[in-house]
Image 1 (cartoon, rainbow, N blue to C red):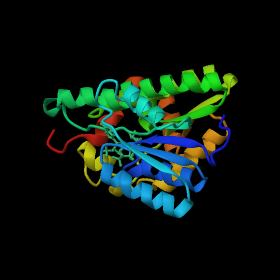
Image 2 (spheres, helix red, strand yellow; image 1 turned 180 degrees about the horizontal axis):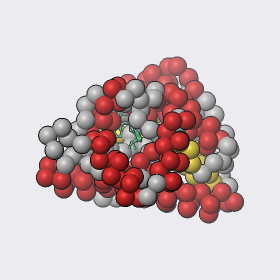
Image 3 (tube, rainbow, N blue to C red; image 1 turned 90 degrees about the horizontal axis):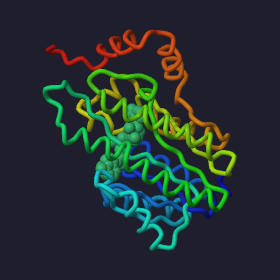
Image 4 (tube, rainbow, N blue to C red; image 1 turned 90 degrees about the vertical axis):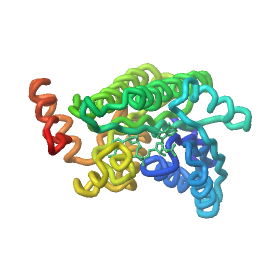
Length: 264
Ligand SMILES: NC(=O)c1ccc[n+]([C@@H]2O[C@H](COP(=O)([O-])OP(=O)(O)OC[C@H]3O[C@@H](n4cnc5c(N)ncnc54)[C@H](OP(=O)(O)O)[C@@H]3O)[C@@H](O)[C@H]2O)c1
């Protein structure tokens, strides 16, 4: 559990846009100092200035490419060099890929695994060890509604998010009695740059995706309650329940229709 938000430090990866930027806004509104991490430093700088002016908190920005091996370890070394002790870690950075097999960029798929799984794991384990020693702290990892099912045409992404949920829930059970909360926030379609960068521009708007404000509020509420995971939005929650009632083959065949390219 957190000692408190106010006057303690939280680190948000992927803070340059979307859900990560909103996490930083809501944490800063609670009085938390923020370490903002992503590759687009100009955006991090603008957000830092906005939050410092609006809430009187301190922000540090760190430019990091989490697709690089050991980026998590190097990021934490930089945070420690700046004399910062983390009370909260939000592992939000991530990206998706929606493609047919023939057009799949294998190198990009491996980068996806590095960002969504490997760097998240490295950051979580290293930070959790310190928090357990201190007996307090918290971690919020971002899963997805697709953490609960396989999805055709975004198989690697959906599998990466299944990993995030299972990994984080395992740690939740282990660490909750030792004073550290690990909560996984599983959003459904949310209006960010995510789908524009994943190969299906405009998807989130067409599907009337949720607003980031509500998604992050849901995540923080679940975290404050010490819950292992939460799905954002009632419809999304019912979908994650419904897929448990059907056979796995039915579920994954159904997913074919979601992102099926028009020409196939
Ligand atoms: N939007 C949705 O519908 C949805 C649904 C479920 C789950 N999610 C999850 O929510 C999280 C946030 O996504 P979003 O919707 O807010 O998308 P977004 O607006 O595209 O933001 C993604 C963030 O991740 C960062 N990032 C991506 N690759 C990175 C790398 N190699 N190194 C460091 N940072 C990297 C980006 O920063 P830079 O490009 O500046 O590095 C950006 O700040 C992701 O984990 C995503 O999988 C999104």
